[in-house]
Every structure is written in C-alpha cells, then in structure tokens.
Length: 218
Image (cartoon, rainbow, N blue to C red; front, side, top):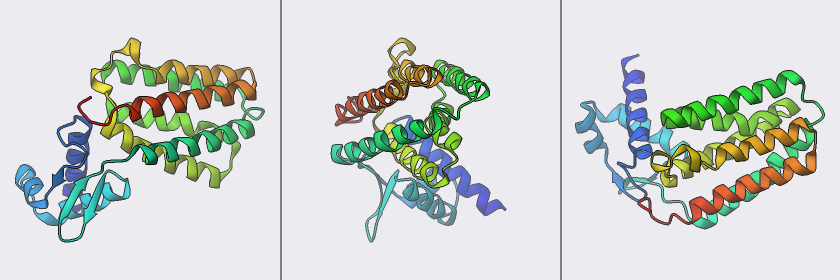
C-alpha cells in the first residue's frame, strides 16, 4: 500500500513539474534526483517513470536514463490530423442521437472548463477537455472509436503539457473555450457540416498554436 502511494506521489510531482515548466522538453530526469527531492527510494520512482512513459511524457533510454519528451512538429501534425478525422466521424454518428440531456451535459462541461481556466487549474482543465472531445464518440456507443479518440487525446495532452502557455494566457485569449462552444452549437442545430468545420478549425488552431512554440519558453 505504501509503495503504491509513493508511486502516485512521484508520478503526480513529476507531472506537475512539467505542467509548471520546471521540467522542460529534452531535460534529463534521474531517479537519484527525484529520490532526493521527494525523499523516497528508487522503486516507486521507477514505477512512476514507467507510467509517464506510457503517457508519452518521458522517454526511457537504456543506459542513459529518463528524458522529458520533445515531440516534433511532424508528430503534432500526425496526431491532430487524425483527430480531425476520428472526431468528425464521431460527431456524424452522434449528431442525430443526442438528446436534450446530452446537450445540457455538454453545456455543463463547457461551464466547468471555463471555471478551471479561470482558476488556472491545469489538471482539471485537461480532464474536462478530454471529456468534451470524447463526448460524441461516447454518445455514438462505438467503443473502438471511443478508445482511439481517448488515446489520441491523451497523446495530445502530452503536447499541451510540454508546449502550451496555459498559465500565462489570460481567459479572454483562450481560443479553445469559444472553439468548443462552436462545436456544441453546431451539434445542437444537428448541422453536421458545421460541426465538422468547427472541429477541424479547432484542431488546426491548436496545432498551429503548438507548432509555433519550438521552445517551451516561447
């Protein structure tokens, strides 16, 4: 039980350090350094590293150690272009199945997203963002589509954590919030062409924003 608890603590501390840009892309992170910082043995730290590698946040290099991932613009393009295809398809499947209750739930998610941004709660923002993007696939009840959407969203979170300027961007400049609203508005109208257009515009906007930041300090 204690080992699991320490693993969770190490995982959360390292991930938060990345969110706060205290660990940057390409930086080496050693078990010894984390152990000294957190006052714990290497076993839970090694387990935390494995979890972070599975999420795409760090890369474990044999005989060299752990490095914070540094995604290329090509990887970003590949992920976001595939997300456009899958999330547009999910919207097409779900648009005529969505009920008034579904729309109310999406409105609630948008409100929670705004609150998380106002509070600068990055972890909560990412959690809600993932729910918004997966919502149509969930309504469509296509478990294979949902799995792929959630997997790609998880990879996208890695890029956001490593490149996004969440903490320094004021609320009135946060593009994702009005862009999500555009998608929901189109779904409410059951206008699949408009929904697909809004999904693509949102993805390309995010991709363009992240691609411009070749340095974490930009």
